[in-house]
Image (cartoon, rainbow, N blue to C red; front, top):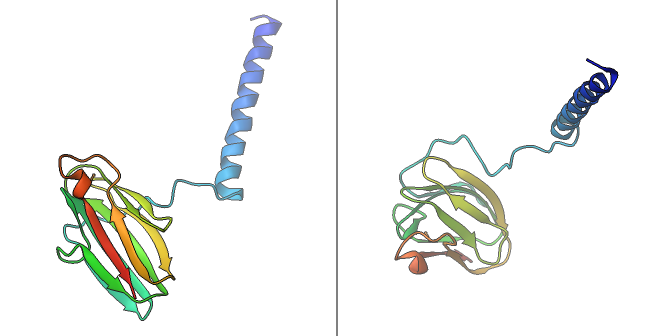
Length: 149
Ligand code: CUA
């Protein structure tokens, strides 16, 4: 091995170490991690709206061809303004997308996994929910509603 080769290997090893330190720093120091929308919650089969407190709800959504099951088959729920909702989303069949219009909530519904978002519904109104991932002939009609009173 000549000197140039040794230098090249030393530089490569130094760079690897440098990047490894940067990754550890990003994870620990800057707290940059995997997207938090991914959970280890077990997939569920039925939609459910659970009230934990006056303004705290947990919403389990099952997306399936071609509806969003929000609460035991219902595609419409009603909550009081100011409610914070923990949204868990899964799919019973193919990949769907769920966007709640007028909010920052935009999740993928993936069979076998549960994705998560939290949102505080401060403004009263009707929030339309649409599927934004082509999922078959009923895709266009795959909608739901969150009514905030
Ligand atoms: Cu579900 Cu498109």
